[in-house]
Length: 433
Image 1 (cartoon, rainbow, N blue to C red):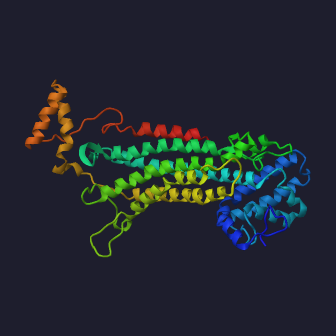
Image 2 (image 1 turned 30 degrees about the horizontal axis):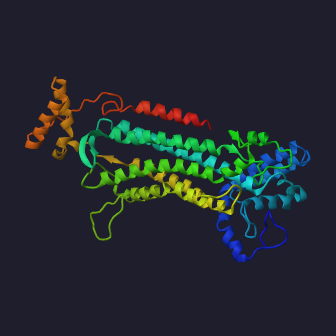
Image 3 (image 1 turned 180 degrees about the vertical axis):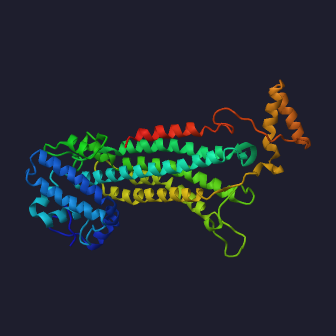
């Protein structure tokens, strides 16, 4: 028999039980600490409005502190006959404290209890994501500074276009991450609202102090309307998924560049042998498997917002069991993105940049625009200068001057790494954790 918060003296069919519970118990373990923290705030509030006697509060708090310690030590488990983490915590309290433990669910539904756990969990995971993004940002900026004088070809339509540099390449992805964090910040603000006290979505006849639990749990704001609080289920996850997908888009696109630039046809960068893989038949192969898997994972992460949208599509107001499946989708997304960022950072610690790329004659035409601009500086109209250089290219007489003098902000000679770093620091300060 499985212990359930909704137990009314009967048990559903075993097959029904297995299908509806799914792997929810395993996913709930990720929220165990958050469930106890939410319950601590709730019982403090219950005591303040007289639903828990004053002398019972310290007993409950001590018992919940013990459970928190057990979670931190890895000793907490959801027993095989217990439905979820909420039931397990209440069961432990009841075993240890008797009837006192049965009082913690007053004024609360499992719906708002789950919502609080999810919001606290996602809030913490978003903080980790921001820290991870900040770390890879610093790695990219450091590489941009280190290789700021090393030129590389720039491309449009995958055709050789104009001179670029490693400072521009690394710095571009660094600055792009700042825009991604703007979406993460929006998701964080949506998550950082307290739903506790909304009950099953229609409030409670108890005189709950919802402002108190908002303060105790450190939420930035309150979901005032109890129906809106329940409607945030799914909406919060979608907002988070959009933020994660934005970061994944940047990391995945960078991984594609690396795969391209590692190939012998480009040969711009390389990695030590131990960071590549080989072929079972071709002895010469050094494959960029890490970045290919990274690219694939990041592409999958960009599908998560759509998957969540389809799961929640056209559901009417109120709670539906479909919502349980949200955890199946959003929880792994945090781990997958974190793994991609971590591996990207590890690889970039060992990247080898080729410093003589543009000496190759195949890149002569990188400098046609430089020649056009030189003629314009001499007073020749742009269209005439363009025509002259175009004729030299057609006749095969173009001879490049490989010196590049770009000085405007954000260009080869002035990649603005300090300014980009200031922009990132301002973005990080906006989170105000």
